[in-house]
Structure formats: structure tokens, C-alpha cells
Amino acid sequence: VPELPEVEIAARNLRAWAEGKAVRAVIVHDPRVVEAPAAEAFVRALKGRRIEAIDRRGKWLRLRLDDGSRVFSHLGMTGKWVRRAPEAEPEPFERARVDLRDPDGDERGAVSLRYRDPRLFGRLHHARDDLAAFTALGPDPLVDGIDVARLHDRLARTRRAIKDALLDQAILAGVGNIQATEALWLARVDPRRPADQLARAEVRAIARGLERSIEQTLAHESGPEITYVEEAGAPNPFTIYGHGGDPCPRCRAPLDRYVLGGRGTVSCPRCQPTAGRPGRERREKGSSRTQRRP
Ligand SMILES: [Zn+2]
Image 1: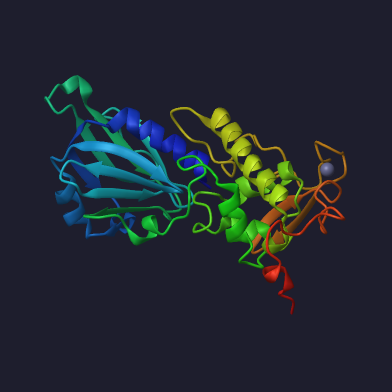
Image 2: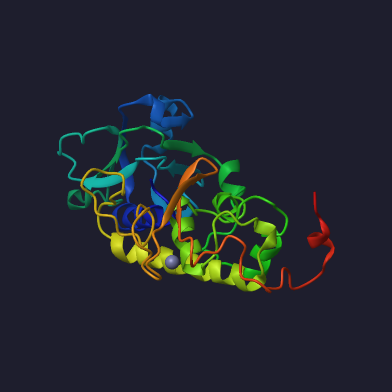
């Protein structure tokens, strides 16, 4: 499932393949992939336009066109953009294709971007302005960086388990199940701890854990095509995600696997203690919010 690093790689690839090029043709093989407008209007809106810039926020890709309008692409569970020669056969599960040429018409610059999505949870969207789902996103760890004080304040306002809170796209954009699991292990914080009980030092450790985990995944997965862990035969590059029952790489205790907030979760019973570390301050400033008890 694409999380921030996979979508970041998709953004980098699309930037290299498509930025500055003009849209020669768009073919929608499966109209369900275009959320809005209708598929025919989507094709018309893109045709002849130049792609000026491509960026990413959270799990969203945004292509800015030369008329100021935008194309949004969300990869859902299994979506992928790949580059092919214009004459190449359709990919398995190809839902749409965008053929590009150099603005000066040089045929050597012609490429065909194919959007492939077996499970079809991904979406394409053309709009005059930013989508509400895009503007509602919280800070992106890579684009904006993580402000520890601000994250701590935000987490202090929810009693949800810390892992569930990290998956809330309004708190941090782009963090998914894998990155949250890895970061909490790096930070030695149990995923089930209530978010409002974390000390500033623990929030800082989680922020550093996310940055490190995202960097490691980017370094491992960078390439012309993203591989998702769930794909048959794909190696698992993660430290503890998908390793329930295996020994903890840090302390050798068998890793626990359980469901939290409906998602498979892995943590170490020894180095991610459920109660946090004894004697730790609960909050650095103010006491009113810690008084809240059922
Ligand atoms: Zn451990």
C-alpha cells in the first residue's frame, strides 16, 4: 500500500518524465478511475495542456497545468504510474494513459504514462483549484518537516492510541501503517499508548523515528517502479513491519502482532513498554489537560 515514501518516489518519477511536456492524448480505459469530472470532460481538460509542475502532499500527487488547473492523483491501495514508449501495449490493469510530447513537437520526447491499478482504489481528479481533501492535510514530514512542539500540542488533544493518531492525515500527512509501526519501534513507544499521555521527549523520538523510517524506505525503494510489500515475491525491507513473532532486532524478545484500530500492528513487548517509562513527566507545560480523567 502506498505511503509517503512510495508516493514521493512516484512524484519524483513523474517530475522526471512529465514536467514541461505537453499532453498529446489521454485515454481512459476504465471511467471509474476518474472521480471528477466525467471521463470525457477529463480528457478534454487535459488535452493540449502543458504540465508545469508536479508536487506531492501526504499521499496525494498534484500536477499543475499551464491554465492554472490541476490534476490530482491518489494511488489508493495498488495504483502505480509507469513510463512506457507510446507504441507499447497496454499494461495489465491499465486504467488510463497520458501521452506526452515535447512542447516544440520533437518526437524524441514522446512518452506514454500508464496508470495501472489492479484493485482500483486509486483516483484521478481534474479541478480548477485544490481539492478539499488536499487542503485539509496536516504538515507533511518531508515537505514541511515535523515541528515537535506543534505535534505534541496536537497529540495532547486526543486520547486515541498514538498509532491511530499518527495515521490521521490532518495531524501528519502521508503517514501510513508501515511508517507508523516502524517509527514507534524506533522511538520505543508502544503503539497503544494514549496520544495525550506522551512526554515531549517521546514525541520528539517519534518525529525522529518517522524521519528515519521515511528516509530508509526512500533509499531502498527509489527506482523507476515502486514495489509494494504485499505484492507476491516482493522482499520485505522493513525492520519490524511484517515481522510479528520474529525476535526484536534490538532486544531479541519475540515481537507481538495484534490488531489496533483495524490495522495489523507489530511492536516489541520489552522495548516498547505499554506504560511508558516510570517516573517520566507526563507533560512539560501546563497541567489542566492532564487533569482530564473519566
Ligand atoms: Zn525489543
